[in-house]
Amino acid sequence: MTILFNALIDSINWLWLSQAMSVVLILVGALFFVAGTLGVLRFDSALTRLHALTKADNLGLGFILLGLILQADSWALVVKYLIIWSLVLLSAAVASHLMGQRAYQNQQKGRQDVDI
Image (cartoon, rainbow, N blue to C red; front, side, top):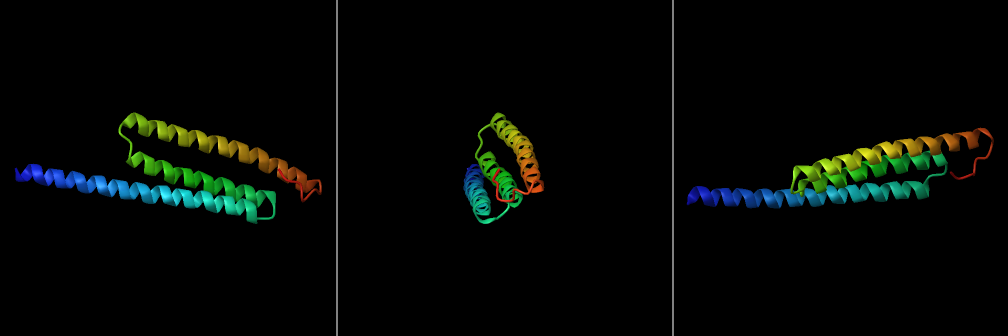
């Protein structure tokens, strides 16, 4: 009976610990999203705004997905989260490269205040 009770206590502690870690990771991810948004609103040039947005959003999504992985019920769900994160990282890299290239071309032409 004591072994069963100790196993129950250990599982309850792990459940509480994983939920607390999940909440902390999701809140950290949300803070990165807010920081990226403030960077877009605050910075002057298009390239610095783009840098702030892509770095903070990719890291914020990573923290949020790590928090969700702790709450996942199956390995299939974990794999889906990792596939989603990798696709978002890939698409964000391509999109930010294209937008940065366009902003750089506009700077070379002398149009400093043209947005992307």
